[in-house]
Length: 259
Image (tube, rainbow, N blue to C red; front, side, top):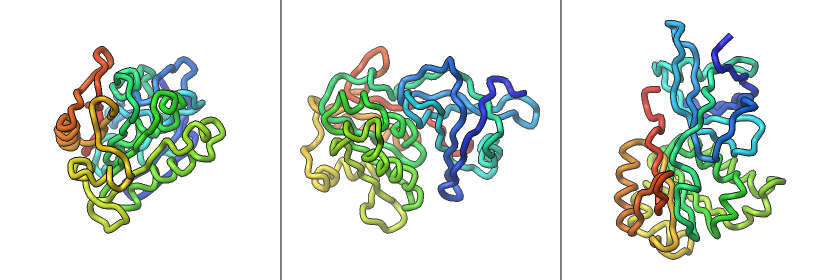
């Protein structure tokens, strides 16, 4: 029996590099949408091999969803990608993280800025009623190299309109702005470039970003985080934290390559 074991209830492979899975939720687990937990499996040495994973399901969900990259020789994901319903994983029920609504000052417009599997915490927040109670508009900018890598987010956003719980709240408040950087697609370019050039404001027919109205959350690779912070600060936004809410927050525990 694994320590802190939870059972896998479903697995979906999106591409040869991406998969999502759902597991049972410990009854004691309380978390705020956007937080992460440590999950993993036993390593070859019999010791737990754990990594930080954002919970992709909203805080009201009866199960927990995760969205992961597959790294062929990654110590954890080389094993994790083979899980099947009925298998068990280790889940440490101590959620933490900075991508929570409480870490931002009140504002009118909320930006979710993600690359790759960095969309996971926003998959949680986009399904949380509180997001739409607090903001007049929510913009999900997601960038991947290829179109197929956007599919998880696209299907999730599409499903929100018909969601019996929050469909009406979402209404037309949520704007989705997916782009690719390698494969030709309808919209292309890096998030930083599309913000700095003003292209995203033009495409969506919305005013530019301001510290007065806009709040942002960032989740991607270390390099992406650094670049986006510079762009957000050029608009006058300042980085906040749970203990010091300001205009934007960045998730520093995001799992990148090599997992």
